[in-house]
Length: 157
Length: 190
Image: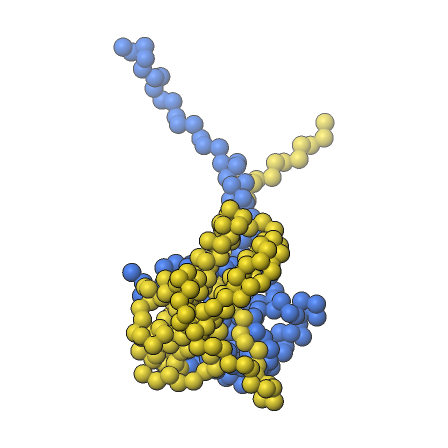
């Protein structure tokens, strides 16, 4: 019996942690590559609706974002949906100059490919969205992308 | 013998890497930007002559009111049946005289084919919720995509999204145009 018994007093061997940094670095590089830095601080709440017929937005440098939704600080700014361009609230009239400045920042050859992504909260009424769309038409920014999540459509069963 | 360089203690390397990792974890936004692509109609030139009227049978009118109710071709509609109805309209398999007619066109790779003249006209109220609007847009886009898949299967044996060459994609696009028009905004009431 006792011949199978392990010799007492043997300690558990130390686990070699030399490769731990490598593992962490691997994770780090994964996140560094996949990360998209937040460029703007959101002041409006945009919980996007979901849809099934979604396409991926390509060439992020050619995309200008317009955020519409209820202000997050609703005790300061009220609950009426507002438009956010860059880092501040804006009105419908600012959209023309916004698109113009985005165009100026883009190489001329790529301007026809510019897309405006509308990130609109799902509870927003269409009125303000329609105003924005009309303004976009006036400045000939006709390619739009209604930002949606991939998922089941509301109201379907 | 020269003194040995002391080994650098790499024990804190993991901590540094962890710190960086956590920084990227916090700042990262994993969601890829997805959405429904649409072209807005170009602005209307007030001096331009009125475009020729589209025949009534060629227009599939979808109204969404402020209570998010649907009116499809004059009847109260339902989001669950919208896709099917839009497909039936665009395909018009029975050649119903109240449904859209077809024009003969010669398309590369497909030859002489019939192209539906049907147009889906989507109108919404200012009070319509964005969620409902997207749901309707999605169903209409799905109707066109399903027809494109069917036609693509018929000609090329694979779905529209899996087509490999630009010519094939363009051919299907011409055969089944994404004919969804958004009316000039107006209050449809409700």
